Image (tube, rainbow, N blue to C red; front, side, top):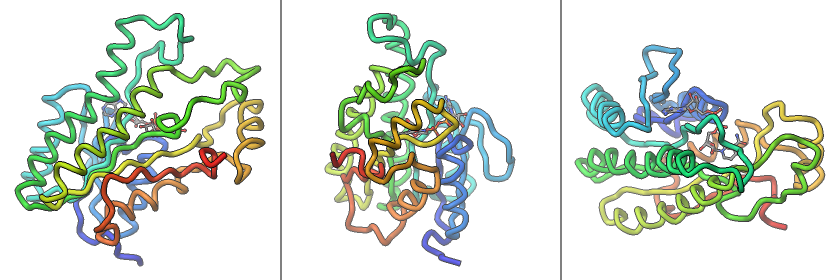
Length: 245
Ligand SMILES: NC(=O)c1ccc[n+]([C@@H]2O[C@H](COP(=O)([O-])OP(=O)(O)OC[C@H]3O[C@@H](n4cnc5c(N)ncnc54)[C@H](O)[C@@H]3O)[C@@H](O)[C@H]2O)c1
């Protein structure tokens, strides 16, 4: 077995979701102690109930894991809380909804970094990954949504773009303390979306298929590992070539 992450204590927020569960699996396959911090938990030993939209819950999660293991080697901000009206057309977005989504998807990642960095500073060591998206790098191609009821949320681009540059801030500030901070930006992941969308997506993307969770997870493990010891502030785009054209 590849022991890339042997005995490293690594937390993935939203570790029970589509991408998070593949990350947890890959981390465990590589010898790491992969802990899912999720609102919905299904495995008691390596899952911890956490609501990233609550600072108290983030603090408790970090404290519980630190008390149990004495360290946190890696933290992946990946959870995806969103309001029920996420995906409203741009002109229909309510101020209250915008505030909530920015707080839940951007501010909560920032606050999670704040809490976990306090712990990582005790050992001058750690690797943090913020999961962003190709839509934090390029604008949306609205043609692929034509004929479907899918609508890419406007706030998503602002949140993910912000996250990519926030990552660089942390990389610059904490490099001297042995803490690396990187972004992983996936392209669209197949999740039984409607046929029209999948076909349009596949026709455009150079590798001619949507992504799969196991296209993303090994790169997350790599960035968490000591093999990536000279990589920080990077945005690793994993998108089958979408952003190359
Ligand atoms: N799926 C894609 O196509 C895709 C593409 C690019 C980027 N991403 C990004 O990947 C990340 C994961 O997306 P996904 O598709 O796996 O989402 P998902 O909805 O499948 O999983 C999200 C997980 O987050 C958990 N969660 C929701 N609210 C939470 C909260 N308040 N606190 C803690 N956990 C909470 C959910 O229970 C779920 O397990 C997100 O940051 C998303 O923006 C996804």
